[in-house]
Each structure stands twice: as structure tokens, then as C-alpha cells.
Image: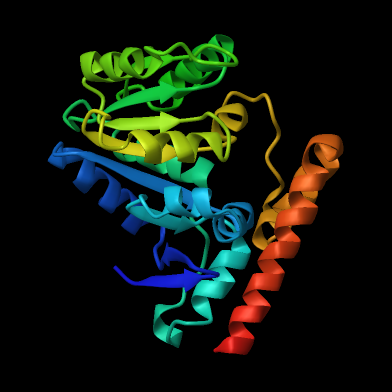
Length: 253
């Protein structure tokens, strides 16, 4: 698999079909924990700007280009016949993986970790309607705030007892990425996803950007319009940093 450094983050030149094939192949191995991230400009800029988060991302086995600016950056380094035609959007990757395992003989089991209990119940119901033969083995909503000392043990036990090999972690960025990276050697075998806002999207709690916003790399603008107080600082800071690091690296090259 070809990877391209995007402001220091090794992003795979990959589409949905390739990503799902990689995910299912590694989930079937059941030999260790694998980490997957659908990275946008926030993740890339934070990994470059924050050494501890950059170290966490270095432990991920597959980093997909979630944001269109990452797709454009990857394509700038690829020959014409290898260029990507679309991003690998985290929420859609989740649906594509569920669709690929929507058969009784698949042998794959999903675990939903994070979010509110009500959100997880809605997700389980929604996925049950759309993908009736995809197995949601278990869900778990961790305590709000400071976790008890034995929380990792509790989570690992729940995952192990469920037999899940596809674990969707929705704790919010950067918490979910740091948690996966920090505990990767202790987690039960399977593929772990830092899935961000996908839980809220698929539960119908947050509206996704219209397709034309996504196509032109303006999903951030739509989400900013929807949640300006919460997202203004993040987008202003990390979109600016992404552009700065990208231009600086191109000048050095």
C-alpha cells in the first residue's frame, strides 16, 4: 500500500474498497490490536503541532484520508493513473464495513465503545434495520469524566467476552486516538477505529454536511455554521496550521 507524508502524517493512498479489504483482513487475523484512523486536517495539524499526539498517531497501522485537503495533498504526490477520486470519510467507512459484514457467514462482530447509553441504543437499532445480519456484539458507554482505575480492565473484558474483532471507539478526538495508542498492546485482538463524530451522525443527533460541501472540502464550514461556539477555535487554529505546515513543507521540497 502506498503512503504519502502529509505534513508528516503517513496517509494511505486508499479508497473505500481497499480500506474495507484491509480492515477485514486484519480483523480476521486475530493476532493483535490494529489501529485505524480516518484523518482530517485537524488530526494532521495536531499530530504535527503536538509531539505527544504525533507519537500516538505513529502507533496507528492505517491512516485514511478523511478530509479533501488530505486527498489533494496525497494526489499531488501520485502519478495520474494512481490519483484518488474521493476521500475515505470515517462515518461512511463505518457504514461500508458494516455492509461488508452484513451476512451470517461473515464471522465478524462489532463493538461500539463511547457515547451516551441512549446514543448507543439508537445506533444499535438503526444498524439493526440497515444491516440485519451484521453482528453488533456489544456496546459500552464509559463513565463521564475521570475513569476509575479498573476501567481499562472492564473495557477489555467486555470486548473479549463479546468476541468482537471490529471495535468502534467514539470518545472524541484526540482522546480516542490517545486511548487506543496508549493501550494498544493491552487491548484484545481486533481492529480499533478512532471514529469521532460518526456515532452522533448515525444516531441522528448531529446533521452531516450536504454532499456539495463535502465534495469541495467545506464540511468544516458547514459544521462551523451548525456549532460555531464549540468549533470556531478548533477550525481556525488547525486549518490555519495545516495550511502553514503544508506550504512550508512544499517550499522546503
